[in-house]
Length: 379
Ligand code: TXA
Ligand code: MG
Image (tube, rainbow, N blue to C red):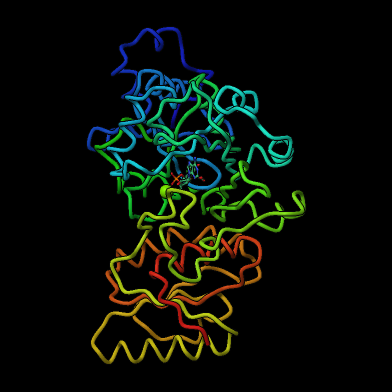
């Protein structure tokens, strides 16, 4: 059993760093993996990770959305390591995570009243605000932009790490560029073991899709990426809100329309060909099964991404359910794990049912449509 923090004795704290780490966790290809209690994070383990951040290293940690790969946001050399570890394109800026509202005024300037309202209502939580950037932030963190994306996560391990580190933490999702975002520490290890210093493993994340990104430098504010905070909730507070065309991701957009640098980058795309079928459920079911049969006669291995309401209708090599259509939060939570499973099963074609755009459904459909390369059939 792992030692609770309270029992770490004086002699423990006098042990060498290596011995101490060995007692706390295990190494995978050189990366230190520390299992952490999700509700009461062990301080000794958080301290090890915080020291790595303070010394300019990289730490993967859970947030309520997905696992992030963190480095000191104010240390340019440390942030450079994030880009290298993830193989992230050098023009895609990173979200800076903070332990409290007060950090916003250190990192950003001209914070509008309406941003303060969103912060008061939605932080800590899955909402990232794009604001004008202050001089304190190194260029590399925001890839030279005049803006900065900031969020305060609500995951206890993330908050403990932020508090102990005493610095804002720049953290993109902890996957290799082009892979689905990680919702478990195992996903992080698959992608990044040997490329980063530490992984804090506190089990699967709560929400499963990334935070909503909203640009507060435009009037009205504009949603750049749908995510864990639904558009409906934001609309209730803001009254007016623009929704960028790529949020619906109904078709490919031109580079000129890409407000968020992340928009123009290749997103997760499975090895397999992927088709999304959208429409009323009975028509969708018919079309999905018909496509599955057609492709199977060509000798292809078929994967179907179904829902609880439809899964019994299908026969194919790999059939999985995202969850019930009645519960968009559950669909979001399962999405990335299932996409990774299809890749592991090495299917040739993934046929996915479209779901409703309500609630977190919009974030799910945004990821599915992009993953398919906009290969969408409407029935
Ligand atoms: O839930 C999340 O947001 C997770 C966890 C770890 O917090 N993080 C995450 O980071 O998804 P990443 O790097 O995978 O996505 C950040 C998105 C990208 O689309 C990026 O282009 C956008 O935020 N972004 C960052 N800074 C921006 C800025 N100044 N202006 C516009 N978009 C920005
Ligand atoms: Mg990402």
